Length: 369
Image (cartoon, rainbow, N blue to C red; front, top):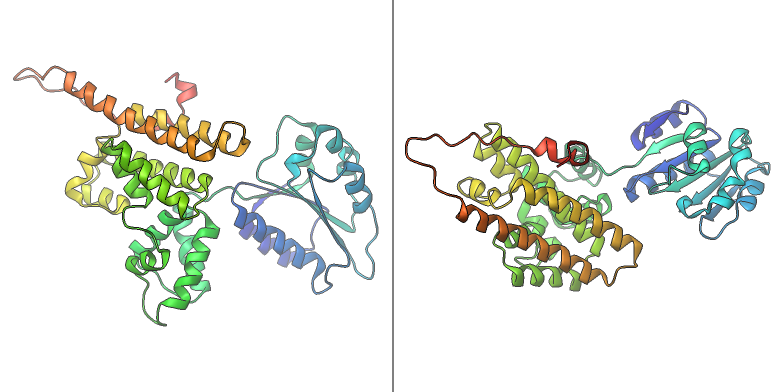
């Protein structure tokens, strides 16, 4: 079984030993994929330029061309680098042409396959997972993203206050490239030595008031369909990618899950308020608008919309997003109506304890919920 590394571990490994013959760079975070590929390119080619470098794309190249190129000997260098981007678009027929090569790769070539996600059912994907060194480029979890933002801020010579760090993640939807662009703007705007504030982030973001993902969830919580559609339209007009908007909303919903679990387990409103960036006095009333059933249904909506936006076969992206947002507003209104229909608790009777099922929701298919 081949080893698996993240992008930081790859850079460290390449400093200690020569590059291997096979790599799979896989995961949906494009900056991490690009960084891993850049590290391999520097390690293999050094200052030797492009002479021993060949690039293919899975939807254009044949398996035979990739195999033949990888089998060539390097010229005036120790190694060649052959990269196959969008490897997931190699057809089953073309990818199977490479199976023999994967069993016995040329030691003087580093062959790298790059993809957001491979179909694990294919023989090629299974063979690659067994033989190649896998570089994990999945999106960072929130606990990983916060220190990453702080480190990248240091890279461009700035320091962030806590709220600025949180807001950067929010306005970029967790995209590392989005965070990096905002940090580079901040580095040229904020005077040297001054800590970057949340106000600085908003000024350079150029975001219209009331157009952030947090404003969007506020409008959903109020069941205000008109405002929800208005915020979506402004973001699309400003050039925000539909997938990025969907990712930002899903990220905000994950935070809502965490906050509801925190409060259900006895956490304080102040801690929840810092996570949601809102008045502690309003936290419980706000999160109360999002029932567990709402959050579970939202997860399925996001997954379905993600497939439609990536597949490009289910109508215009704006219509897909509008459908998601209107359904979320319906969930809020139906939850509020149901709570009004519930009979009051008789005097002297203690209401049943409500137990958070956030953990259960994340494993919905296995629990039958």
